[in-house]
Amino acid sequence: IKITSVRSYSTSVSGVGKVGVIRVKSFSGTTADTVKSEVEGLKKKGANSIVLDLRGNPGGLLPGGVDTASLFLDSNKPVVYVVNKDGVVDAQSTYQTGFDLTTPLVVFVNSN
View (tube, helix red, strand yellow):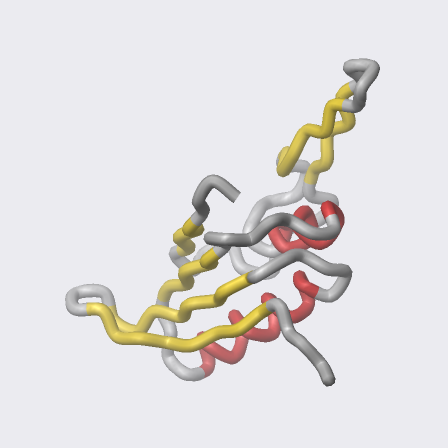
């Protein structure tokens, strides 16, 4: 049984057009590749903007989250700072230019 942490669909929004929605339940080593594939598929189906829904996402693998954010950001942009118990800060940044910097993107988050 394969359980996916990424699902997508599109919906029409009055005055906006077709919006692609990508729901990410948690981050893994393959999340960024899956999200990229879903964005490409939604755009081929006419989506002109994307909603990345992270509500209820407890996290997962940090590199999966950084890689997913990197899809939509320019290179060398900070994504997250991790502070260890000794107060040492480790900055995680994008390492390359994302594949889609032009499509309007909205990210939904909550307390998770």
